[in-house]
Length: 557
Ligand code: ATP
Ligand code: MG
Image 1 (tube, helix red, strand yellow):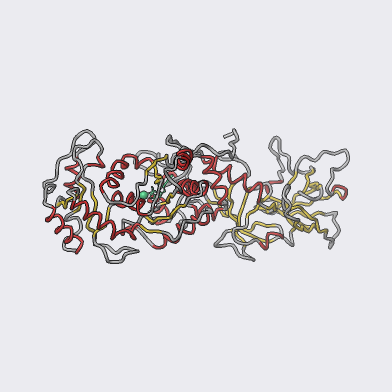
Image 2 (cartoon, rainbow, N blue to C red):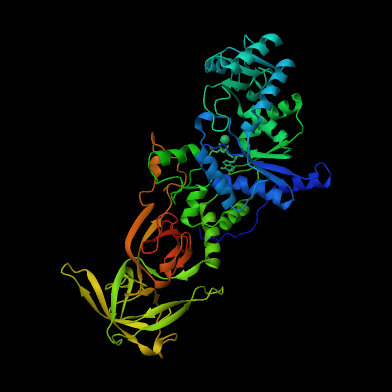
């Protein structure tokens, strides 16, 4: 990944469609919706749909609804509803009015089901779910009519009323549309409208024991809400004829139109709520907001900004072609944002004590360093005195070729401070270096020593005034570009990167970091971008998460 992407906005094929509909007067105002099923937390794929739906409404002065598609009582939960609302807002969008629920329309949908029965377009079927499947045929083979297809309207009305009253057990009967069992489109082969499910629903309680199908719910909900452009992912393309059949055969108040776009696929990333839930349930990660998760709450805790995710979605664009997006693009978007906006600070991850032997005991100089090289964010104070910490990896007794940091007898600049020379390495009984004795050149504060070139610059913190902290080095959760592809018989779980989290304790942060608040973001110079963990970081017990490395170093380092 050596070519640098650009944060340019890629094409969105729906924008000209919306524009044309407004110009022609087909719609005076557009209405879109984001329709999550509350059965998990939102992930980066959902961000694409959110940016698209809310983005179009915003750009063209329309409205975007948040509608929970809650037709499946078994898998849904209030926790997910609350998390979804928080994530949409965090991403920077606000829905029109109150959030909506497909379950708000259950009465209306029921009445429309009765309407279809009365117009001869629906029937109660007694086939078991397995038999319905067998009768449906296949892609190459037409289906067969259900033996219950020709029941009278009266019988259908009676049976449907009794289904609703709870007379029958789950799966004993269903209500189906009467369309065409020979249709080349399997979705039109008498699809289910209502199934019996004696289940408690998080919104409607125990009012219903029959629940409408997704297909019977979605388009009509759009129509009720006056949605003009109903945007969904490509797997619903084959459902569009059914979506339109319901709109054509029901007295709906509006005629929304469905458009499909390619879903977002990211390499090294899983975007399936079912699998993300498995990662949580089986404790491969610490929770839905684990900083390695592809959930919005995970990215947020990792330190991603909402702006960087919106930028990423703009870069990806909206089309029908699909493909796999390189995760480097998402990392590029967050690096660009943090480079421009995150305060600089120094934090030593593996501290090695340095004593400046020729620096007067008891003397302290308060150095001032800018918080940002380009933006005016003020300065931070950094006390310089006799004892400090550098990173253990910045001193090598036997340096590899091209090593520009500290070596025995060599010189290096301490960032924002003096040039020092390594005079002696103190070792413990096992030969480990535990301290460096150095000397500084008092004429080198902010300028190079005359006649000598000092190439290396390393970061440091004062020994006494720095604060101890924990640093969590996060990396990609999956080591395979396509996590789904594993050795024979394996699953995506086999591709979990065992080094996706490395916890470093006893790190030393510069004094200005002592007051870091939850979610504060920094560039730790030479180390990467970090943020204070929203859950575990406190004054006196700071915890920083690595958001992203300074450069794309995957496979390197
Ligand atoms: P999952 O496969 O993770 O369960 P889903 O499509 O079932 O996802 P929903 O809650 O039904 O999840 O999705 C809400 C909206 O987000 C839908 O309009 C859906 O098309 C869209 N969406 C889901 N995943 C993606 C993705 N990867 N890229 C773009 N849009 C997506
Ligand atoms: Mg879904």
